[in-house]
Image 1: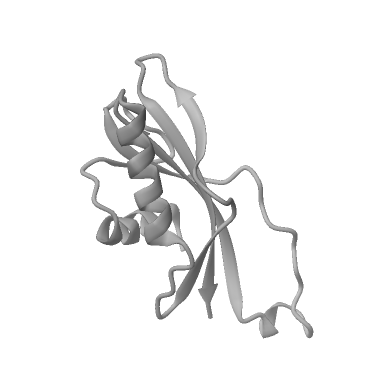
Image 2: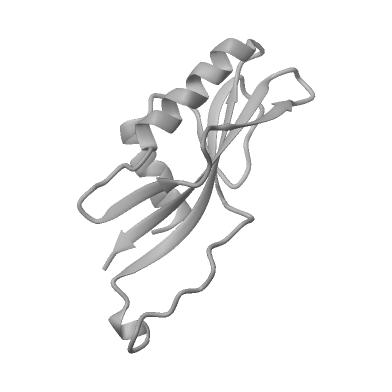
Length: 123
């Protein structure tokens, strides 16, 4: 699953007009999809790669949402709750943190939150 495929799926689940992959243009309400800096430890299946039943992808979502902290936090929690242990036919989403992480405001005073997750894609 590529970052663009992740973004396209998330667009069907989360209400947001502005989506980005890799880099965010400066706008007040947007979500960016990035490869996470922290990856999972490599786990080998017994019998090697051919017997592995799933692949993993570590993703970070950056929620950049208005200069109103309350509204930004509400949006981050909405996204968190929509994705927490989300199961679909071909994948499972597991959030790695107990809540969205508050980053701070950017240079324009827009509040930002990050949600780190792992996508388990079934083979």
